[in-house]
Amino acid sequence: MKSNKVRVAVVYNLPSETTFSYHKLWPKAFAEHPELETFPINLSDHRYNVRARAYYLKAVWRPDVIVCLHSTYANDLVIPDWLVLLLADMDAKKIFFLTNVYKNMPEKMQFCERIGVDVLAQLGSNEFIASAYQKRLPAVKVVSSHAGGLDETLFYPGPPLDERPIDIGFRGEVEPYYFGHQERSWIMQAVQEAGEQRGLKLDMSMESKDRFDPNGWAGFLRNCRAQLGTEGGTDFFNLDDKVRYRVNAYREDNPSATFEEVFRDTMEPFKEKEWLRCRLITGRVIEAAASQSVLMLYEGHYEGYLTPDIHYIPIALDHRNLSEAFDKLSDSDFCLGLTEASYTLVREKFTFKNLIDEVLGELE
Figure (tube, rainbow, N blue to C red):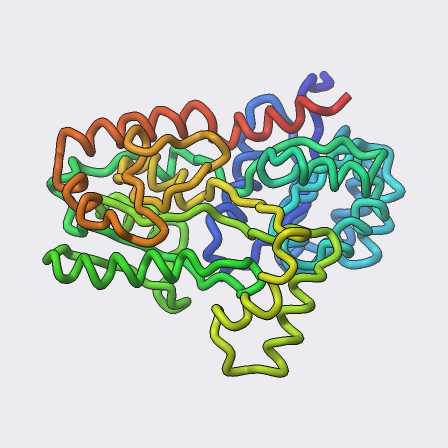
């Protein structure tokens, strides 16, 4: 008896050593979706012959939809050319989930054209950015989505806040200079210095050696009373990578230049014409909220989802209110209200099933 489930081929790249939770959790979410029948193609899984699976997919399995997840083209395209041609030749609706929209954007747009993408899932909902995609790819439907989401089997509430051994935790990576900011470094350094003076127990790092795998990250969140965070993304979105090229060329000629010097000489003069913020709520923030850790975040828009002093403790960009933020963190009743509000929000808006349904629902 033929299944009424939508048949979805899911193409992704998941090396065993990856620490990015969303790279692991998106394929898992598709596989577990109750209304889908999925055919996974993990480009890094050498237990199977990827070429044989792909030809079986085309000749026998015949999907209704082909999904190329974020990990297929995060920085560089990992789908081999023969598979690009095969996907282009298949009679199925095609969805491409964008990520890292600060790098290789001309090539990512060309990839959409090569395989015949029907739906482009952009990061966030910025209408100016959506219109740029639409102008570049007029035959493609552009929809809003997110890289990070919520897997409730992995990220769930920890013990009461007063029983957690770490006051403030943080993990992250230093942003490239061409983002136009260094917010992760700024917030971590400021809170590290002020928090130590306050006698708080801190566990914060941006060293790659200190990163967790998804299970370790989930456990870390449940051990923290609060998590630092910022909006993700760049202040200089563009489809031609010109800001990245200009910044990188300047740094090659001036390898000892500070961020402030690079910004002054390569971005500030062009800010009026090129400043287009692609700033996002991140998976780290979503996962921390699901763990009912208190969010301590730079003031920002967060795509309209988060409100200061309702979902998070705001920290000013100039750090003038750090003492007040620490006072709020010590107020257990106030923090309980924040964690309940942010927990409810992410469960309503950001489960992977909901994110999948929203994008698949855009197919005609």
